Length: 201
Image (cartoon, rainbow, N blue to C red):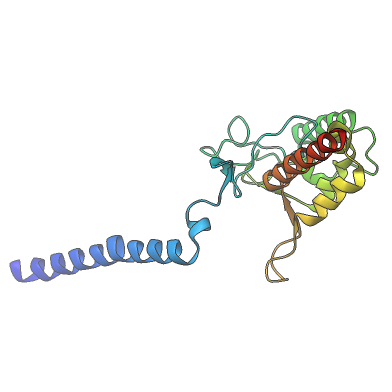
């Protein structure tokens, strides 16, 4: 019996150390060395303070900001409770939600032309998608520009600047990270205000 158990225990311990300790440490070390930002959670800082992650959506409700997709994660945008609404495309509840969201978006952005983009009325599978399609960001330009006192051309240019193309030119779709876009919007507004103040002096 001992002759059978000893090699089995040795193999168990060796492979537990290899796959449970050595391999995870090696992969973690390599990822931190080669991709430090991504391995650290793609954290975004402003003035030295972490304000979010480029991988997780945040709630924005002010008309001065671009809004992300709706979220069904917990109470909305809850990173500890990721998940979709699980509502079927033929379900009455989903139709009601989409209709209510579209009407609210129209009221908040009456100067926008064209239909409300689908991404702004339907939640993603995770409820935490940090990106929206360029069309969903551009549709919001009139509201944001008006609330900020900026020209629509300036805000549109900012959206185009922060539009990411397909990864390697093949994977995914063009997208705009809402948090990064809103931070750039704050910086643009601050810069415009500074220019006005310097013009007065």
